[in-house]
Amino acid sequence: MPVLQADKAGFLLDGRPFRLLSGGLHYFRVHPEQWPDRLRKARLMGLNTVETYVPWNLHQPRPDRFHLDEGLDLPRFLDLAAAEGLYVLLRPGPYICAEWEGGGLPSWLLAEPGIRLRSCDPRFLAAVDDYFTRLLTPLRTRLASQGGPVLAVQVENEYGAYGDDTAYLEHLADSLRRCGVDVPLFTCDQPSDLERGALPGTLATANFGSRSAHHLAAVRGSRPDGPLMTTEFWIGWFDRWGAHHVVRDADQAARELDELLGSGASVNFYMFHGGTNFGFTNGANDKHTYRPTVTSYDYDAPLDEAGDPTEKYTAFREIIAKYAPVPSEPVPAPGPKLAHAAVTLTEHAELLPNADALAPAVAARRPLTMEELEQDFGFVLYETSLPLRGPALLEVEQVRDRAQVFVDGQPVGVLERENHEHALAFTVPRTGSTLTILVENQGRVNYGQGIHDRKGLLGDVLLDGVPLADWTSRPLPMTSLEGIPFAPGTTPTVGPAFHRGTFELTGTADTFLHLDGWTKGNAWVNGFPLGRYWSRGPQRSLYVPAPVLRTGTNEIVVLELHAAARARTVDFRETADLGPTEE
Image (cartoon, rainbow, N blue to C red; front, side):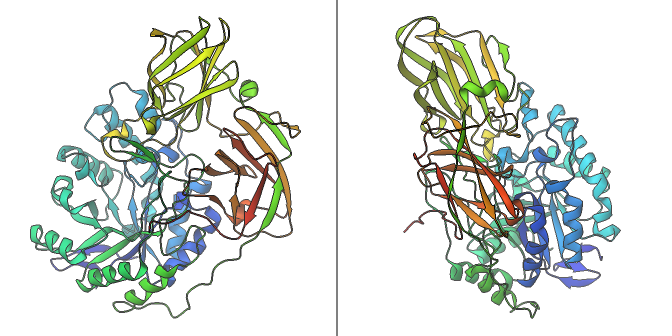
């Protein structure tokens, strides 16, 4: 494939003027068997390029382990893009934001006391250099200079919103070059941060979702020559728990796109297809109040969460056709969906009495953080004995992020970081009662200074002002459900419990899991982690990709943290429910 270059007027590809028409498509948010479908639909909308971040935390879950297989087979994704005739913009971080857990930074970095992320801290830079070496060495043949689809590689991500250390950016660029990246490098920042995040000698691009002409004129004012590009043209937005489902008018977004393309700029839609924060991978924001992101990353994008074209797909395709050739094939039709009502979950296993079957506990004088337990996602179960009886006040310095508190197995309250809660009063029935605290990591902060976001119980835990000691900390990452001692029965459970059921299918298709009457927890189908549900909304269904299902018998497991309807049924429906939109 030809190599991307830049002159005073814009981009050149094989010496000819070229405009990047790109769309965000994160391979790690899409089931790998669906990658070809999404890439084909990108081409049919008129795109010539796709963009993807790379989540360091998934590829390198521990310093000595690195994965490039299955759903993380980035080489395969790049090859599929090339086979579809698409180029690629690669954004390897190390920080990606992306409303992704920790902004893609591995949790094991936070096991280092005092480490400064996104800086010239030698410990951080050594980890980044190792990551780049492991990631980019097998990707060299996918660079455009070697005949592959990767036209350009991004340095960091919106760094100007975080810092202004040019030496840090220079180190990253040098590291990329040492790893064989010989295609153009670029940075991206919001317009007001452009100069802080720029790297001399590297293309600076701007991120925005409105007032295209105004922002591009500002970029041109500081950079009179070279290509104009928005690396993140925001055509939708993400949702957080407890708010509404965010949408953006398709006609308005199309007018902004027309204005942008009319200026001669290149564009990358953020997002073309959002996908899903499967499992526990959603991030969070913390601008003085912690706000976790929902499971769906639909993003009100041209392709919805199930990969079906939306109103924006058609509107953008028509605008793109004014400036570039668009394939003659029609807009793809929505894919098939299946429904299966009232699946009863007939087996259950309470979490607290069966915790031993899931993981061993670690004894220490104080509660250990997830990072100290070498744990990325999920829950930690803390226990200690209470030295008194009668009324008592529990105080926790920092709850990261949601703590369910039990005394002798009975629930006595919840402490939520989001609500700035630190204290809980209850009655201790006897001296020596067991205090149990189940803490959920609801997503590490992915933006701003809050990315140093350690999880679990942090700081002092006091009972009537006296520190509690002699704890056990049990990591519950929920990476495997094997060993859970399910038993048949419909007896009401107290506290967190797993529920399991089966259902039969004669064929497979995408579907949506609805948990009406359930409160909060996680769900798995055939062992695949669909993500979190929460009755507070806005999201009220979970996307189930067709490849997760199979003909014959299928299994569903639900971890309900509070209480489910007595019937303990779930529904699979043909439509999603992402919640009400703001009027």
